[in-house]
Length: 512
View 1 (cartoon, helix red, strand yellow):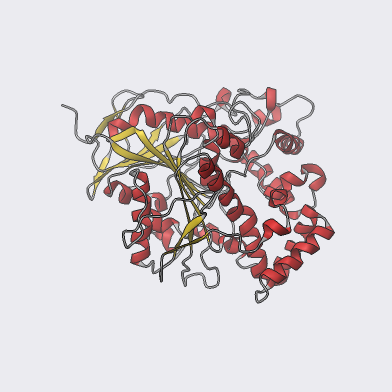
View 2: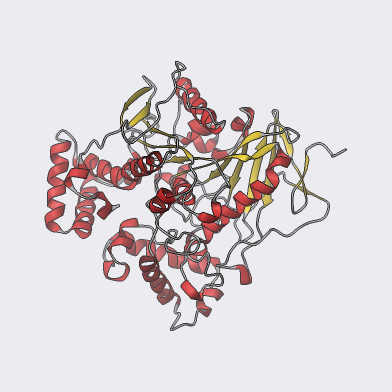
């Protein structure tokens, strides 16, 4: 008879921990450490072990820099880092159960930071609702998204090794999750910010077909990819900074993780300054993040929205955004600096004439707002609202059941930031009492926590999400574009419109 709390995986046995009725298994390898010849290549199967491996503590996080500004307090960097970080964590109500739905969470962090080990993503509450929950680490920054073309150790995944890691983790789930009580044919993938962008990208990755049935995208669409031309320019700049010449990639392969992080920081500063357009090109500088997944490759053959439109099977999608997404990124920046930076960037993207037209349009659309608030709205529309809307419309148009929301609750912890980026996370995971969540928001209203968690759990179980009064969420369709407004005072269904009317003022694809 198997020992209680011990699960057999394809690499060996792991022993979990029982706490308050939920079993957790932490630091379980899903792929081999991407070192030496595996560096910048496809993930390879985890090495096997003898005996029973304790799965009682999180493994290392991927090498990274701490986040900056207010977000740094909300997402403190895991001090234990290393190449051997392709691990995952599992929470289950009962390893001996059969056929429970599975949630696989992909963390955010701008494709250059973050960890599936964050206490904010503890899966205990989901497990308590009958959902086997998995959080993963994946390669980030240069290590995860450098494009090398035919010079790569594995050209099939070059420019998106981090996405290949996510696919490998999903394959691990297919092969092993039944041992934890989960149903491999009933998998939902979910993520926030760069995690949501990863989920949206996976919708168009051929090798991910059949690995999941539903998807949740929180504050992220399918637009954050570079084409080969943009990625090639970024690679050229990286190699220049490393001192590589010609076809000699030795300085890259010999560089330590710290060396690459130093260069990555320098390139991020160049992108943020807006003074290096001649090196990166306008499409690359729009991202402000150099190392994004590269489309036009074997792994990601075309831009994700195009790939999603061609997909042969449908996927259910729950997607949405927050009402004040970008306020957090401008926290602490003086109003005059916000305004001058915004004007300069808009002129770089669109030219002086078009920029002036957009500024005039914003003034008309938001006549009573401060200029700072106009920039927050513009950036929220550009980076989040518009991509999320396009993703919802694309999935709905091809017949996938689609549900859309806007989260609209503000904590008094960070006065003036409103419903900022990441604020919904403690509601989704039910982790409002954690130290990390308390840096994001305080005094979470219980009715809104219950409403959010009920909707997410319904969706993961394959049901239509419910409103607090039991009424079902409306499906988002091309004809009836309705979203649910998640707010404390009243949860309601409203038309999903572009409040700024920017689609008429400018083609948003030019600045997305």
